[in-house]
Length: 165
Image 1 (cartoon, rainbow, N blue to C red):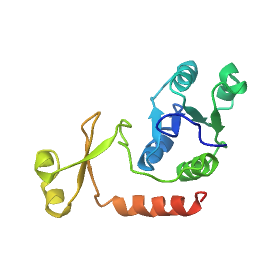
Image 2: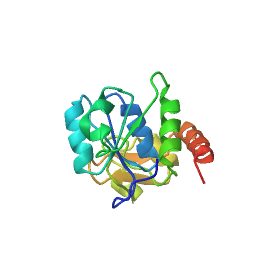
Image 3: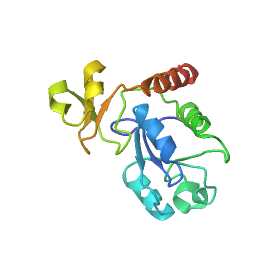
Image 4: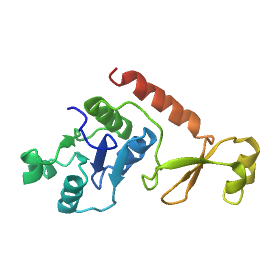
């Protein structure tokens, strides 16, 4: 499956059961929409309106006319895969190359901000050692490379090494 020719690059719409996949795709820099509890019909309408590829393991979803006809593109994940295996599948099938992350909470764009602007929301201990901070332009959440970042970095390296050249 090739990446669609849409402004801004690859855009996906993850179904209600793929919230973890959406978060990891956002870490990879993919514009990945996700709405908990979204109805299948609404998901398909959303994907059609925004030129998104539907990502799901729900076989019945792919029986809907828009997906079956190819009007809306979709990627059906095999049932029973663990989260990181689902992410590997999406990366492989859509030819994703990791880019600059998006907000893992709301999918907004991140922008670097000075330490002085985030001192009121970042824990004091993190302000001591962290040097770079990013704020989401949509929800305002602040990110920095905390202790969890080592795991994220190792997963990103593995995904980058396994993605197509």
